[in-house]
Amino acid sequence: MTHTNTLRNGLLVALLGSVALVGCKKNEPAVDTTATPAADTAPAAAPAPMTGAPPPMAEAASVNVASVTVGKTAAADKSVATAALFAPKDEIIVSVRTDGTANNANVGAKLTFQDGQVAGEQSATLNTSGAETTNISFKNANGWPAGKYRAEVMVDGKAAGTPQEFEVK
Image: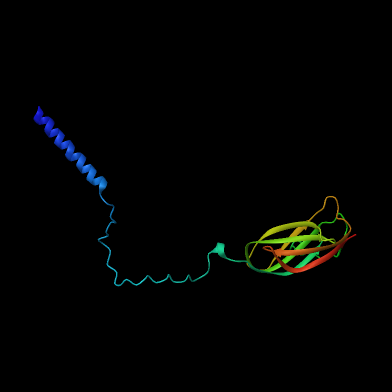
């Protein structure tokens, strides 16, 4: 019986010693035996520059405002007859004619009253690959105060086109 206990204790010591050795072993980097050795130790060359068209999300709008027209009504083709005089209850339409390519461009119009106060601001999203007309409408349920107004157009937050002046009587 003592012989069995001695053998058991010996095995237990050997097992614990093995576990201790494995736990103390250094972590050495693995060696890839299938890799081919480098011909020289020169630094790697810089990656080649990207060629071709940029991805669609990186595409910048290259749309130009060809004309800005302010009117009261729009035809089926979105054209607006110029009007310089409006009644207080009239709808004011700022018609923006663009040329070029745009993917999700923001076309905005701002109406300012004679004292510089903003009377209205609206925007629309423009997706086009050619000539396009975008109409932005303004209504005032209380009626437009009499006076001189100015319509300004922006594309992606930058002033575009020639501002148009009109009057409400």
